[in-house]
Length: 88
Image (cartoon, rainbow, N blue to C red; front, top):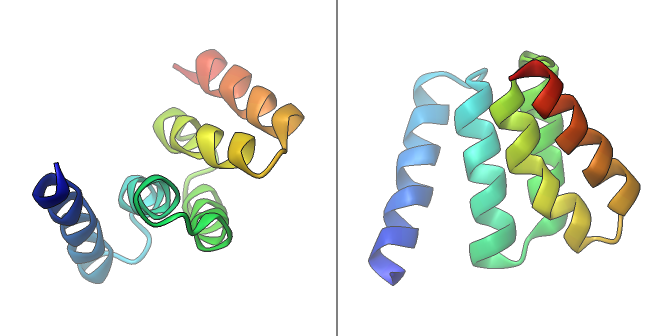
């Protein structure tokens, strides 16, 4: 699992290096930052970037839900989950 986690982060960083506006890569990296590193503030910045690049990306919205829940922003997490479901 540790190697898989490191690989997920590395691939997300590589995708961002290739295309800094890749919303899904930004969102995946944000999720990794929360789940693997406990860096919710960094993750939330990445989600803001992702959704700035693609505000209607349901997958990016879904990846942001756990991070918002972890920081106690339950209403925001629920709103993002609902919006993602409407978009999918």
